[in-house]
Length: 275
Image (cartoon, rainbow, N blue to C red; front, top):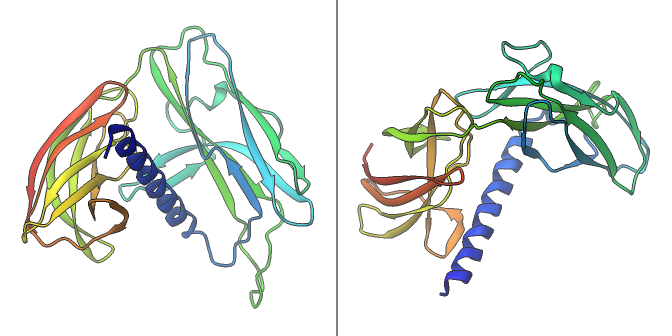
């Protein structure tokens, strides 16, 4: 396989993994919540200088045959240990939401053409190097009732926005390993510490061998590791050439290789996992 073909295969694999993670996140909505809105992109990673105004656009596509009424606002958020997100209407300590302006707070969207919703971020001139994080929240104004349900909970979408103000970057290092039970299955995890001043994510593939000597391809979850935190990052094993289907691991599992983070960072991994 040529280097280009291998690169494209890995890119497709990463996209499929991201799609599966997004589908898993959507599944936590209550079954009766109905939402006829598609939002693109699902996340922004921007950069700005102090006293500079940065503008961006969300594309909102309403798929119902009737017009949809939505409310929009900003929110602060925190990441739980399990990777789920808590949103807060209250300003959290150090919040950068006072720098953020959104186009409008109520919106009616007709089916068909996407609506281009604008927002902007303007860090003050005296802003030190910092990573600004907030979410643009989109909520249906009228909850939709599902068949057999007397009422329905209103669904909402949170679009995460990161803004690197000045010289910020993650610094990731391996702080340990473990085997944890995730979804009822023993799963290898890397404990990753971020001593930088911006979030980071692991990317890439590791080579692996299980107790039978079977060759595996191992990928780290793309969960963000926030500045100043240590987070457990799960590893998913697949057969080489089939990055869509996770396989059960026969322990002990040995992995080796290099995972990348940020523009220039990388982490060598040479570990053995056993429950």
